[in-house]
Amino acid sequence: MSISFKKLVQLHEGEKTVFLLRRHLLIFVGELIYVAILSAVPVGVWAMISYLAPGLLAGPNSVPLLVLTASGYYLMVWLFLIGSFVDYYLDAWIVTDQRILNVEQHGIFSRTVSELDLSNVQDVTSEVNGVIPSIFGFGNVFVQTAGQKERFAFEQVSSPHEVRQRVLELVEAERVRETRIF
Amino acid sequence: MYSIPLYLALIPYAVVVAIFALMAFIHVHHLIHYGAAGRMSFSITFLFLGGAALNILLTWWLLLGTDWNQAIQVGTPALTSFIL
Image 1 (cartoon, each protein chain N blue to C red):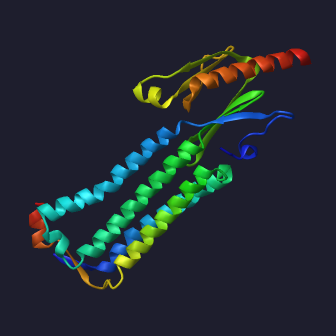
Image 2: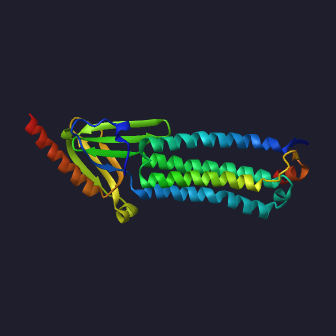
Image 3: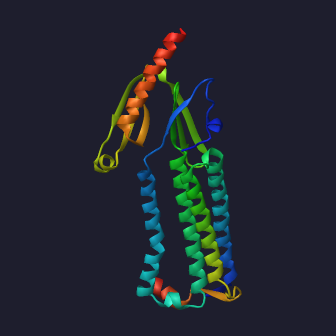
């Protein structure tokens, strides 16, 4: 679960990282199933051609052309796999004892880092919707801040109710800390 | 009906390989730069690079002995009649 925080965010003096969240692993497994289906497509096409037009596979140039096409196709499928993983892995929520940081990877060249102070948190809601999320124990956590319409959302994270509880504890601790300072 | 040498088919393949290499470098760089220390990240990167190397090696092995100067008949009657 390590991530190079210093390259993404600068922690304040004395600030400590409490936990780091990513989407549930099952979300990435879903992408793997998609990759498996894409990988099976050339086999299906080959079976169809050998049934409908076996002559196309028998020519002297057929093998090199098919090998080059299949190789290029699988390289692109492989690229899709690593792209999906990077998107999954670099989307993270970092909760410190003072802030919540949201790191979102959009494609290859776009990344958004947003943050909110725990002292501004007003309400934290967790939800688990659907059969698969209930079985595997993942869901969403929404963090509502004062004066902001938009909610901060941890999407498809493991154990959302426990995460909500821990965030609320951190909010309480931060308020106590701020009261002592002022 | 006309013919083109088979080696011309290597040009689009080379373009695909070049795009793959560029994008793969960017993805792996992202992972290393922002958190390749994780076990899962390392495993996926290893699987990705190993799979890509296997793909290229298998392609090279399957195409050993190919005569790249032989001609591809474009618009052969058999193919045209099948497609049309």
